[in-house]
Length: 129
Image (cartoon, rainbow, N blue to C red; front, side, top):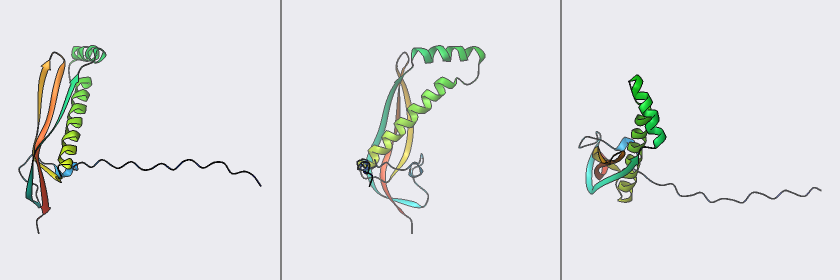
């Protein structure tokens, strides 16, 4: 009889972080097919980003040929995505299942450093019957 190899330890599954799903977030003041039953307040997600030296050099080279500066476009898109996710997490922490009147804002804090803000009203909605 051959000895059995030890079994790998059982890992406990980490709890999934709850966020408000993207399809329940709207730039309008309502969600079609749902009605607002409770306002949970303003929520926001803030990300502050800086450009790297290498990214700045690469972007400078891209400006020579013109067109979309993809290095900075990717940086901006990533910052917006992170701000959006933080806002969604904050809304879920308040017990909201939707966000209405969602907006983005960006401010240059100093040369090469930008704040990206996603904000909106966290609400509880229920389907219209």
